[in-house]
Length: 172
Image (cartoon, rainbow, N blue to C red; front, side, top):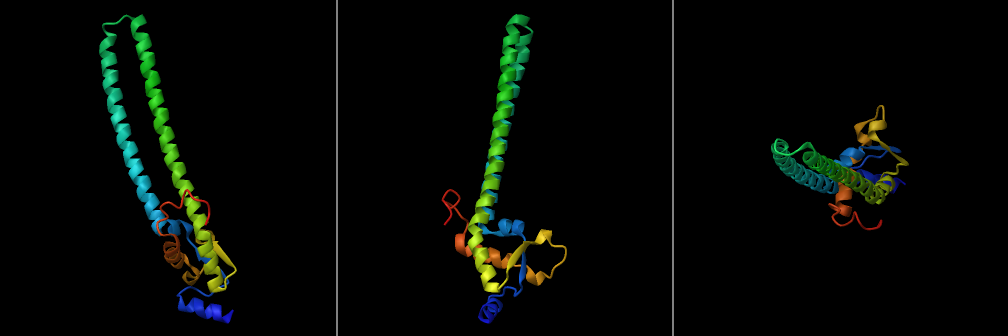
């Protein structure tokens, strides 16, 4: 055990029975988290652009429909208005589904990241001689010396990099 603690000192990680970590920061500052955030932001921008295009198209169609209202009988106009309403509702539902899928993808990537990080965190436990890692946000008071977030990020980046291609595979 003394050899492990000496090794922990040399690696610049704390020697404590209880360690703390910020899992949010660990994800956000890791190469994996940065890649996921960039992908989600790019997909969000594309979705917003698509939505703007659809809104412009629907606005144009609505104007055309409004112009027809004056020349069509109510019986002729009603089916066109109902079809337009169904189209608008369908587009809303499709866009909402895409946004929900993007949100789920982001959450699933975070879960996968934590799964891939687990062996690294177990190694950190062993290297420090600690018996537990506690989420820093749930700790009322602790020394910053017990925080292993930076060490975890370095080791996770070394172990899995940005994780491209790892999200779909089974656990290593």
